[in-house]
Length: 318
Image (cartoon, rainbow, N blue to C red):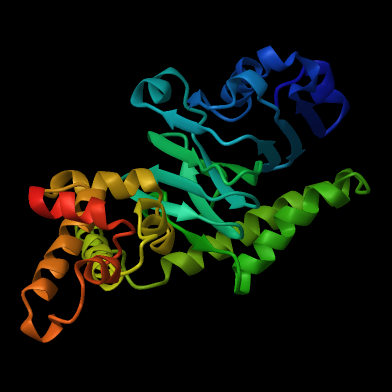
């Protein structure tokens, strides 16, 4: 973590926060701290004028465990960042707070509390810490690529994918990460040595279990299958007036950003697809003589239109 070399030598545990600077300087300080302590990234946030964050890092042999709490933001690591500085590390991220959209190596996923994901510093990535009116919180386990006893080409297949921590070795690893900081202050150097080894072993067992699953489909195939599921979901939920990009993304465990990106190759945007499908269903109902008893307003409401005037305008334009 960001801190003086004296602090690093005195203790394996380092805590920092934006409380050390003014509210106006909090965001700039946080950006610099993340780039130094984790890896260089570009950060944006709607809370730059009142950014408050805190981080604690526990340095162990073979590993470093850090916990973070901060307002919603977006972080991007570009090829230029990678060229400028690459510590050649894996990070295993455990989510505690608001959902997080993660993208790396053409894999995209939405992580909710209790989910984990693997990413590394040698590839560009994008993170979207979503705003659910609460702080984003997470725990990072940092491992050198050389310390993880798994073939890199196989481990890299997991980058940017959702890894559940709710059963088996995932639950054990999540418990280790969550409880380590609380108990580490009561451990001597020998115990910390063993704890560091335990972290590497648990991570190795967990990731190996993920790799033993059926082979991962190519990214293009997975995206096509995901888009097909999303289209089917839209068709089956047109009657819901609350159907919107945010609800669609949440249901499919992806970020809103990824949802819009999936539709970039489609003829229409997400919202335009929803509206067009509703209009087509309404048109079919209005042309059905068996439904002649139903008013225009009732037909519009049946297919998710809240306002009849809005429906009439959209219908005439279409």
